[in-house]
Length: 301
Image 1 (cartoon, rainbow, N blue to C red):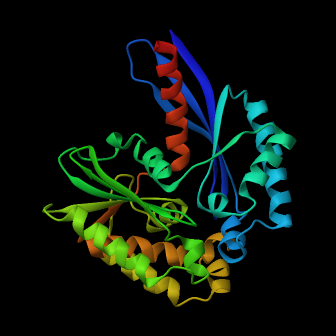
Image 2: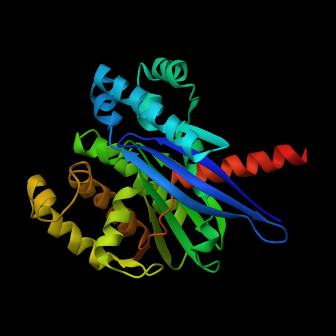
């Protein structure tokens, strides 16, 4: 017996807002499959408001309302049976974040959970990494966002430590990351990677996905520290406008890609990793899986 349902995840980040619709395929005697059906990304960049003015502007509040209404219609036409919406760094730090969440619910009926950094790291770490990792190896999983970056140590398929740091692409663009925060991260990476002979980095987030696509590497093959450093230096030789016109980057990617690479390269350097793997998963995938497993556990109780 084959059952196919559609679940949706809404990820309200500091740089962009995403709607992921996935097919949940269940077949008796076989493991459940999660297949991406549709992904819509809207670059609202809430972090540019919040990290400077501590609140979301009227313009971006209206854009959020419009986006959520559009997402509601898309979920309806796709016949989505369950959804979950999570807001991260920008919304949780905003003075009017809770007010906007209430406003969105009032206008669209979409309920949003504002999650903390630890919850965010846990959801991301719960994504089905087993498909992508070698169970005999040790990894530092780095998920770069606009407002924060989540770091997780995975050894032999098991999560050993996880932490969220307020180091994100939008914060770095606005020069809002203190030296102390970088030092804290360096200490955390050093303390949690000591004793492991060899570590590889796993990178997730829109920027590393774009870098991987540009590299032309085959799926499953890593990017080397040398390649990442070389491409980082190449990007810096171009102006913002040239990155759009000559390197064909979207305008909302052309500025944040440089600080994102800085975070990945720093994580590789401090952990001693020579390679970074890019499995193309993130918070949205984790949200989909959390909906499914919450449903399964509640049905078996």
